[in-house]
Length: 240
Length: 281
Ligand SMILES: Nc1ncnc2c1ncn2[C@@H]1O[C@H](COP(=O)(O)OP(=O)(O)OP(=O)(O)O)[C@@H](O)[C@H]1O
Ligand SMILES: [Mg+2]
Image (tube, rainbow over all chains, first blue to last red; front, side, top):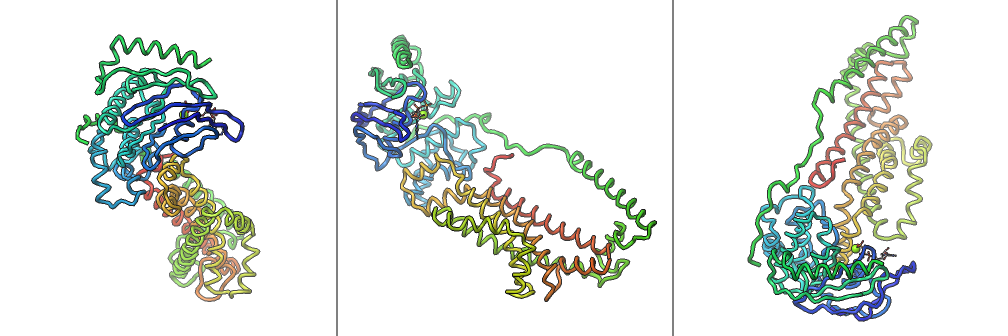
């Protein structure tokens, strides 16, 4: 996935992105942090093909992309199993194929036993897991995450981070992750890019040296704290 | 995919709440109103009797007698019940035709903007034309029998079905549409797997409104079109002309009851269809 001098100006004249340059290779987990409204969602929409760049070039194989939205976007009339099977269904798979694909995905996000629950019977965190399982079913080699855990409390968010990271080491996809949370960014990523306020530009990039798999205790390491401080300062700079 | 997550703690599951309120608190207040209303009715009817204007209003118990025929002013026993059945039939057939037409039009309008812009003004016309003014014209053209009564019921109940369904079809969230876009879903897939399910609650709201209207249509139609079997509308007219207030009131009450039954049935059906996901209001 390559962003090559990507820029975006909306028809109303809003300049959301300017000169974005970076690459995400298979096996890399790249995170973009930046202030609210700086164009992070726009970046993912361009990557997915839902929106188009107005300058530069975004090169990516769009044949099979996993995309987890900012909210769970489940079909309220479908239970967990049917929601998880949606994408397989859209690609015309048979019921048995779908069941074979959805079962391990539901298991992987820890929702076994909840297959016949409806979204309104689930907590926010559980709905997000359903959304995650839905994207996993087609085993995409490229994954886009748009602040998927932004609405969760801190502990749930950390648990979900660990879960997502396990999926990453398990599946080895190329991940592009958006977040407001610096510790989330460091914990998950191979690389973190800091974006400036609108129009969004990459103002600083950090390679995160920790090995995978990462233990939850990594968050208490001095090196983690040092990176956290450094990124916080960069982000503070990006706000002004 | 082998490693399995610890199960979710039970506390994470939300209880499905049912609207609370004891039976007594829901039944006693309307009962008090009913008793009060009945008392006023008796008082008023008695005062009319004193002034010897019995022909304008009857006592409630006389009305009750007329439900079963053979009331004080004498009709064939069961006449009113038969008329009730016929009007219900006309309303139901009209409603079903309106549903088929309404859903078809709403879906077509949703599929192509030009269909919507071409037909929507006429849908509004259906809504704004006074049905009473249209009825004679219908009679002149297709006769004064049952088909005309059904047609009146169709015309009066078409609009709410079209507008509510159309609104419902457009109500699916943008994020859900984007998932379908990302996976190259066809028009039909989007319609059947996203838009129609999303439209169900609004669709049933439309059915519910139209169910009440179709009863009105069937009775208004019956009022004018006396050919063939007699419905409630015809009874209303006959009793009014012959100054038979007890039976007139019985006919009015039955008409209202019929509308209410239709209304409640579709409300219940709609709730049932969406009970797993429709947010309690
Ligand atoms: N369709 C649009 N037309 C015009 N402007 C838009 C459109 N979509 C987004 N914008 C603007 O582009 C900017 C970037 O929006 P975007 O949603 O990408 O921000 P974001 O970084 O994801 O914000 P947040 O962190 O709050 O989710 C915002 O200022 C927004 O107002
Ligand atoms: Mg956003």
